[in-house]
Image (tube, rainbow, N blue to C red; front, side, top):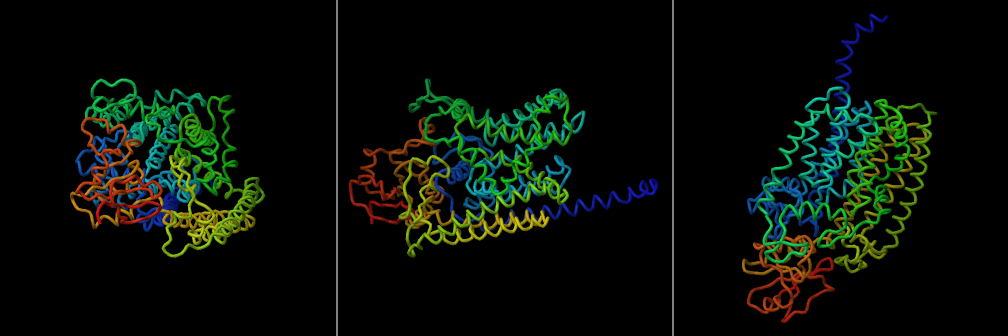
Length: 624
């Protein structure tokens, strides 16, 4: 009998390999189809780009092409020195192929998101010897609200998730060999360098901090000596350093700067502003100018539940295998326990790091991949365990809790849908909102303006949300009670697909408040070469005008925020007006289009004609 088994193994191995290949292909096809539905197709085209970060970042990429300058970033003709370039290079490449369109600006982030999902899927077999664990982890990320919403707003944090996930996967692979390969070492170095080019110093702080703490707790710091440190350092420097040197040369200090308060022609250059001001001082909450807010610490941690609902309900069961105490007592932990420890350290490092700094809601995104992997690993174990195993019992209990929470959420959504009266056709949604300008420095601050009265504009998304929450959590509870675990997980995933589509519909409905695209469309056909477009307030408040009109705009009483520091360089265009310089322009012969909030119209020295109104904003002109 043993001989028969040994003889049959060579025959079975190709069949097993073919089986895993077929299953992997099906999983990749499933994930790609979900990605096309949620991150491609219609979601690339609607809503239009939003004011602030969304359109500012797209405009930086557009000006990169117009100027043929891939070293110094510019926004509205002003040096924009605070960001790393990789995301803008990606958008500029997309614009080169497709033209400077809003969907072309979103396309690179969508592709990076797909690469993240596939990386997490491929991580499953490495960490847990299970393709299904990788599939569940990737499915959790595909259907997570955090990744979805911050891929539809142009921010680099999803790219940070990708490079950090690649680095951690390569590090984990390197641990499986006494003499790690150069491929894993150089790949890790390249991923760190690309992350530095994505979002600065955290691109190297995160992976090195996670790796060092993990090796220290596992008494394996000697791994660093074996992991080709010198050649890896050269790879990192070769990728990360050239742009920084070129940007420093192109943006030197001007005059004799002192302190942190610049004056025209007397300003620090790239290295101080990019490294000291934008990274060190920002972390310490001392950045200048102080034009941002920070999310309260408890809210920052609590938002993890929102970014990963409903899957976060399984997290407490998923982190049980993380045994930090045993890792301190033993020289080496079993491979399975090491995997859980690495994922736990990865997730904790990011959250703790930002707990001591200024933070925005989306700073928690790099925590999502390791949590998704831990939950995916636990869901795989639950599915493979017997009907009476503790994991199955815990899964059924969690399903009951999810149903109770889902029913409560469904009742609330249904109540708001019924309570909110439908708005009359043509009603501007801004008239039924409250005003909370103190919260607008947060990335989602404008959504706090929503009131019960405004819910009438969101009846269909609310109804879809109510049905999805009730049906999805109920189906999951029933299916888990009869031990159909995988189908129950699919029910939760289907629920989230419907919820994310509803969230996208709500964002489109709310977009007139968040975007000035409609106003750009109103004045675009009337705009002549000599006309002036001016924004009353900060550039970010109406940055969509610059992108969609393809021109530089003037700023009235808004020399602040992202354009503030660059405006002090000697070659900065004189586009900033105060009341004294604005009045002669308005009274002059050139036609002006003034963007302004309807409740903050400035004092005008002559007649004003309303060209268009949308989302609580309007365009005024000094000529008919």
